[in-house]
Amino acid sequence: MDRLNPLEYRPISLISVPCKIYADILNKRLTVWLEQNDMLADEQNGFRRNQSCLDHLYVLTRMIKNRKLQKKDSFVCFVDAKKAFDNVNRDMLWYKLMKIGINGVLRAIQSLYDATQSAAKLGNNFTDIFPVQYGMNQGCQMSPTLYSIYVNDLADDIRSLNAGVDIGDLYVSILLYADDVALMAPNEQNLQKMLDCLKTWCRKWRMTLNTEKTQRSVVEPVLYYGSGIWGHTNWRDVQVIQKKACREYKNVLEFSSYVNLVRYRQHRRVLSNFKSDCLPLAVETGRHTKPKIPLNERSCIYCTENCVEDEKHFLLGCDFYADLRYDLMKKSGDICETFNDLDLQDKFVFLMSNDAIQPF
Image (cartoon, rainbow, N blue to C red; front, side, top):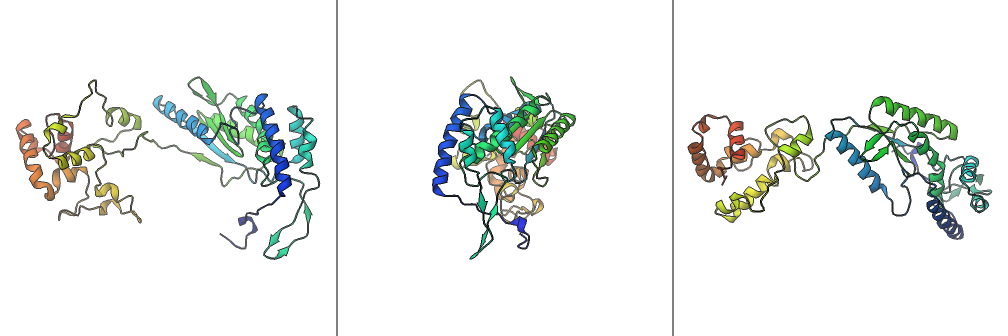
């Protein structure tokens, strides 16, 4: 933080308690009227009853998942307005309120902004009092609601482009949460149309975008369960891993055979953790330490081979488990005559994919 740069500081604005109570009463009446008359766009979830940012997160992740299954690209741009609440033009706000039919309570809302003045305090020093002609009152209950009304027509403008993406029976192109905006498109051209529309809207209503916080997002493949990813095959599509390599659905409800075949309970526990990728091997634990241990330095502490303790080393290489591995290797040689001639990776694949082989 640059202490000499005034833009690095965030001021705290205080308003009187009676003013807060008055604004809270007006805000409750206004929000009830907005919801009853369906005035706010469905894409706006900011500070609305029974709606939250989690709804938008679900829509966004659902869109990404569906389009990945369809082998389609997804383009998302997250937009942030620069000092959004501070830069709202009040005259334009009054116009938008009247445009949606707010008349009787308009004068009461305007009274909150009549002849507003402020002074800055730093230590024990005060500046001269100066008028405040722009922006929403900080700390006021009505400010988020008024801002939602101010940006409400942006959703209509973006939606009219028909440049969004399909999510089941829904067609979504924009998500709003107060001053945060997410634009979603199926390709670069449609996303650029939305950005051009956003630029036009900002010029018309005198808003400025924060280019430092406005970013495009490249969504990396993510598995929708808690296990890590390991295996001997490099899959191009993470959904292929999810369907073919990580989950097995059976038509019978019973324990896996190793539960009955493995004699010792502690061995069964280790094997279960190994199969579910929960065994604390150094290859996994090393990336969670602070500082993170480089991959090639996550060595096994139970042997002198100075090898990375990964699944292959644990199952096939570590001398510490030689006595447990003897019966496994003998049985594997009886089933596959060429087992001892296989390289380490092929042995690992054989052991993990052969139902007749039960490690430990």
